[in-house]
Figure: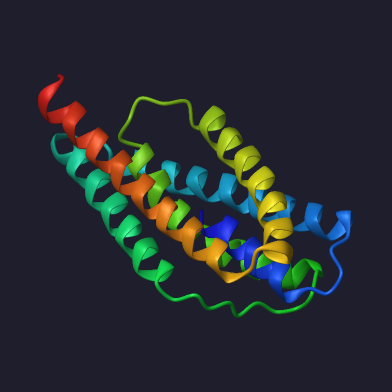
Length: 171
């Protein structure tokens, strides 16, 4: 949802909304959102054995913190986006919006999942939502960014609660 919100901002900041620009935003955000969880997953796997007894709490608190941060950000309808579509400009935005995905990847390391499938799904969904967000930004404006951030925060908190409930009560 960070990438979606950032793509809305990018759409707000641009005068021209070419297909090439929207695809560039989608590819960049999709790539980094897929790549960062893999890095987090690999780091988390190194320590998974040592903290297996509390892994569900770690995943819960990581998702809770990220979700609360997104909800907090949703209150500030503010976009500061550079106006370029060059590789460096888009990469900076891609990394900035995917840092939390690194933490999610650490949380995923404690679950029995296929990281390649998960990261691919994350990347594809993010790319598609970013293309849509870019177009929405040009049409709807700042309110759509607030809704995206709020929704994303609620979803992350919900996922954290789900993980915690499954580990505490369903195993």
